[in-house]
Length: 306
Ligand code: PHE
Ligand code: CO
Image (tube, rainbow, N blue to C red):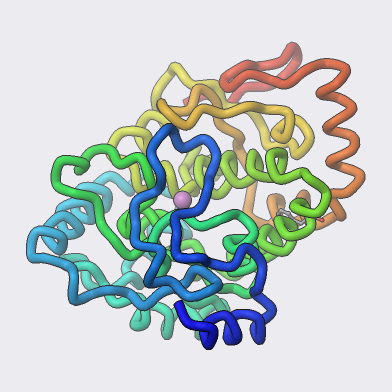
């Protein structure tokens, strides 16, 4: 990293959590530091997609992951996702982010940027607020085919990018980024992270055809997609912002509970108001009634049936 990089970063107003060439501290990730070479990232944590490094085995891993997920989508993924997944381009090798970016920018004003792996939350929020979606540029090993602890390029691309073509969802993601920068100053990132988890990663949507998944963690998962939409075990309750912010989540197993939205418009509207009083109200309620465990259903709450 050169001082030129630092300069470029601050010119864009992205001088928070400046990359010092070492892996960031992230919480909830276990005892291993994130993988990825942070030395090659710019000060805003973006890097050049290192496409020359992909081996034939890497491309094959992508091809097999894509094929396995694609055939699961009918009846489980929401229509907006299915309509846009083809816009990722080549399904038989790891795509070039710049090529997707060009189409995406025309559709919704978003761009993709490569990152070496997980990045600090303020840097992440700043990118989202600028309609730049960070995509990890490495792919899991063949041994991790079914499960990888950290997000890789397959999760980030296949899971997240199709819905960035949807204008309402795309606006929600930008608003989330801006809200994240504010949450940092209010020390409310833990509450806001629950919103990301239960919507962007593990959200379900009610449609005339039944429940469908829109969360990237579900759409990129070999087993949890079917589990979240169809299995009798997990509990599914209606999206409610304050209720959701009181709810803990698990990072090491399928979710025990999911939140269901009616539409992306509902999600966007419900999250549009200033969260400053919402965070206070949630903190007060937690102090009084406690947090809600993953998969817990409260008295009087209606559940959605699989
Ligand atoms: N309205 C939120 C705030 O004021 C911003 C936000 C929008 C956060 C959408 C998350 C999702 O903080
Ligand atoms: Co993700």
